Image 1 (cartoon, rainbow, N blue to C red):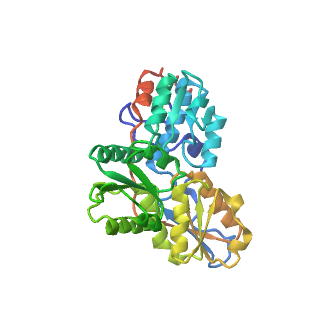
Image 2: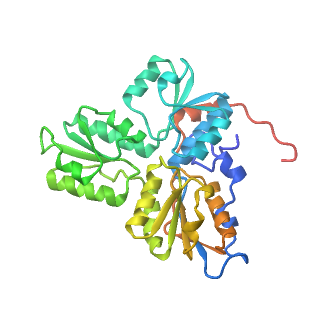
Length: 360
């Protein structure tokens, strides 16, 4: 199976099929071209794009399709990127909004954003064969929610109410949990016991946004407790830190990602908060020529669910429009990998060996 080079149980994540077959790696991007205008350059941020949880989730769908065959049902978008979802749909994945849309007894994959216990229970009732692609960092937040609720805490969940991740986490302890999205909402919070309050956060928040809300919570509830380690994921933090380090050097920041990607939207906010113009784009077709008219330096990054092929598409567009050199700016290394869910590991273990290719 082409996606798996390690033994079952030792899988460490990799590049998805469409990344392998379509994308040009960053190292293949020329550091300079002769067609650009003097002085106009691209700062290509690193780390950018796919995080370990996204790679894992996409690989889960692709391995399931290869092992079990189409159709494979997926509850909600496996990750929040239209290109990725369309690619997997072409290969036989069927994306549904609710578990009720999955035929009884069929195989269904939970997205990287996680699901509530109510969804899990409904899957059992419908005898669905579940493969859980929830990001391990989201699972961490779910476990924390259950722990705090069992200990009698009122829970404050910091995040965006319309996000799939918040829906799933809220479902772990709905009677004990309130969601807040702004500092202003903290002021109106009411809890049974102000001395027994805990907070958790969505994994894809802005670091600054979360910091301000947590500060307000601590002012209102001095004895509030939180997770042992922050809930905002490493990839969200790293991409935001990269933008903070480079935004002041750029006239424009382009963030590759879909509109419903929380972490991608946060990258735009980070840049704008530093007074650098920034836009969220699905691909190069969304770039408006007037954005580039006064720009000498354009920084390019991508949200954690955006594939590298789309980044390279943007780089090529900028090359064609006068930006002659690319400087990759690595702010920090990123080498996190997550193992596959046990359902997929078992499937790999019993899958028949692939016939050798002639000449291989």
